[in-house]
Amino acid sequence: MSIDLPPGQTVTRRFPLFTVDPTEPLAPERFALRVGGAVERRIELNWEALQSLGEEPLEHDFHCVTGWTRTRTRWQGVPAARVLELAQPKPKAVWALAWARGGYSASLPLEDLTAPGVLLAWELDGAPIPHEHGGPVRLVVPHLYGWKSVKWLAKIQLFEREVEGYWEMRGYHRRGDPWREERYG
Ligand SMILES: Nc1nc2c(c(=O)[nH]1)N[C@H]1C(S)=C(S)[C@@H](COP(=O)(O)O)O[C@H]1N2
Ligand SMILES: [Mo]
Image (cartoon, rainbow, N blue to C red; front, side, top):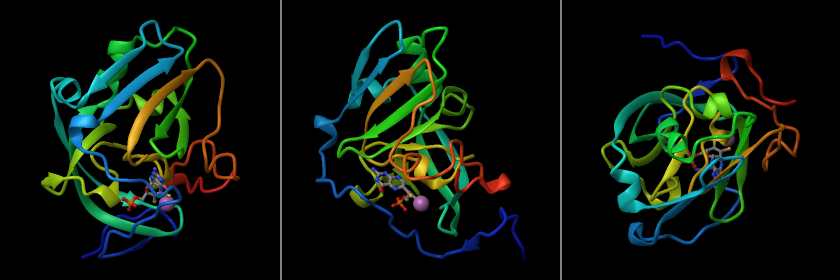
């Protein structure tokens, strides 16, 4: 059986870890997500508030820019679009930074963040996301390379201009579509 893989990717059985910002575990009761920047309404959501927004499943192949693909990865969480609706992006907001607790960030066009399927996830393969994979809550952007799927999500910040996150500043592509092999800028 062959599966459809983006160019240059190889399937791995494991789910390798890739972390540049060692981070202490956080109990869900202490979780908070802030949404700010170019929004009409700054918001802060705790664990319960986030979960009360509803949830949906996602299954996708997770592609790391370094070449590994972990197929059929299953997540559960709330659509990012629903969270952003609450904050009401300003009409001129075009770009977003997703921040991890420990300072890692990834930038992406606002329309990629609000695309169907993009989740703020709290379950991986039917169980709470393990700490090392970014729990209690991580961003999952299924249509872009894995570096955009920020673990230990803490803040989403909107901008009226293009901005760069951790890897974008270090030469990674501004968008990162694996099917177009947008690895480096
Ligand atoms: N906070 C944080 N999120 C991160 C990273 C990181 O170093 N720190 N690495 C990214 C990269 S490059 C990849 S491929 C995926 C890897 O996710 P995993 O460690 O759960 O396999 O997380 C992304 N999110
Ligand atoms: Mo990666």
